[in-house]
Length: 392
Image (cartoon, rainbow, N blue to C red):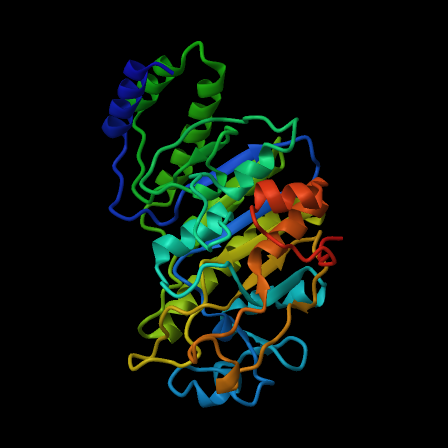
């Protein structure tokens, strides 16, 4: 697209949109392939406390670290397997667990260590490639985009992007579509006509405009709605795209940075995650049986609570896997224990497996990509667990 058209498009967006300082969710991105299987990746921004979400109540040391943060029976957690219990704010997912459509991988992490920066941690998680010295690869692309480069029939569905934050996981050489819903987005009739004129004669961008108008109308109808309602709208939008040509969707949910008052703040974030997953299931219909959802965070949090009834940036965390294509009803991974001698740097849950192995195993079985390509192209310098299998 010529530079002058880019400027015009930017001006049109500025004219037609009123963007809040912090959008309620980062951009949602889509990609289409020739596969009938569906993959949804949800980035849980802020560093999710795995020990609160999937509580190891069977570990005798667990209770010695948490006094103010409600855990166990006090928090009405739901037993999963006699050792782990699910946070009560995800109780709506227990039916999926019973139907073996929900699983967790515990004590997982990227190779990112020690600095505990949200920005670096999220880049490491979404880029997925590491140099042998432990540094992030120099390529500013994402592992889902590199995966698409290995699927010869992957194609651009639409191309429309507006918003404040990028979603690195789908950025790269292969074009994908993206759209950033916002709680204050408002496309006027005049703005619509302007965009239609800009897109006239361009099939790709004409399709983009239709999607923009569709989501704009939904957002306008829900002004003043709470975050859960907006996330439900986003999930329904994702489901509708996945029922068409889209094979892959990625978006993020924030609110997992729980330095203070973790009981209240984590509750809000988990309820939004629950709404997203259950809305996807409800709206995908029979496609749910071919769907895999991977929900992951940049790092975990400290084992010990801090002085403000929260937890600080940590290392080992947990991944959530859901969908009709998942071998659920299981907690995957090797549990390291919570005795002081077993903690990472005497403060964090010790990672026992690379979270990239789970992502690699999923896309290997969903999209039939070979192990060598996964270890060298999609996730550079990954030594994946080739026996790991949690997709039906």
